[in-house]
Image (cartoon, rainbow, N blue to C red; front, side, top):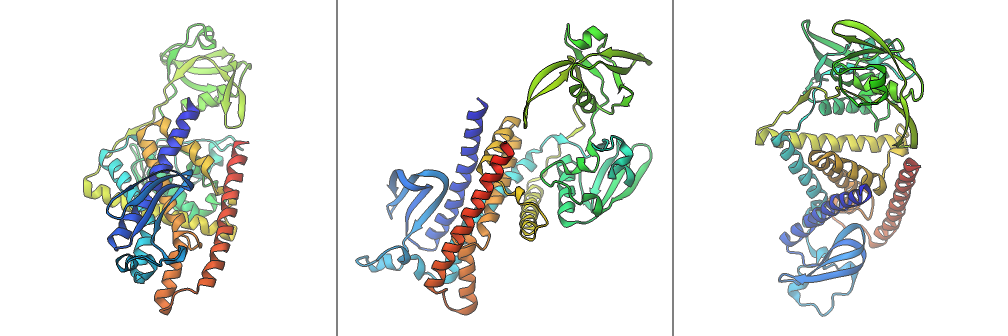
Length: 459
């Protein structure tokens, strides 16, 4: 079932974005008076088609589902002899350079517009998500809070981060976004913090602390910052489970395991999962009195990104829900925030591409259809908000990638037309042919790299 849901989520996501991209080309071409011969979803052999409209444009579905195209009346793709003068005037290359620029740019711009519409809609409705209240977690290697950059900077569990680098934040997604941007820009993180009962403070995390952080991973977590969660209070006990046999009760406040303090339910679960078949001493508070119980987690098999692993479970459910916030925006404010979000995502994507070219970021960050399909399935299972946000991000990525100055992409054609504007002459046909071949080779290389990275992640 999950596989079918992943496939369907991937097809809906990529298919709809391709349609909108090509509709951008189509509508602006019609607006500029260019005759459109075919609108295809997919590449390769046409498997279904119908003709509509005054120009009898062929609307088609083609065999290869990745991509699509708009075929216009174009002298470069065949002889035009025998056509009436009224059609020849509508041939693509006979249009002035500004019309050609508008037609080519319309596809990527359509992707950006869709992202703006999706984000604006989400901002207007308001998305419930964890607030910017934080909890500090120990560093993986050292196992103590003092080892993390966040602790050394002065942050403490329960702090509410209100601004990052002078940008207001209310939700966890805003905070994480600012952390990622600072990591890419290699700049300090300046944090405005409210601490209950103590007032407001300012702390700085140095740029050096962000060096080497995996930008696709948990960037705040790498600094020791996590979502604030409630104290680990037992909410339910499974009858006959190791927890019930050990004497755990609903309402117990879990404070430590084998002497190691637990800050929240996630920390407790992590320790238990790693203690399969091993007896641990669980310290708790019950009616204000400390109690220590011996519990032996039962070993069970569970799936993970690395296959099947053995984990420990005791049959006790603890409080996990973090502080949530929902901030709906007025329509104009939502549109403004959406435009800013799209702009920031575009600039971040371009910076990442630049870092990969210069070797500052790993080429492992290049992802392909397998990873996109995996994330599409995951976000679809998480709910409509996550899925729509994912579609918006993919739409932005498609827009940016298509604007790269690589021949065969929209950006390559825009480069030709920009040179024509500057020189007053079109790019020589022979030069264009050579550039097309080089561009196709580069594009195929990127596709192979993306598929290789996708398969490596799976393995």
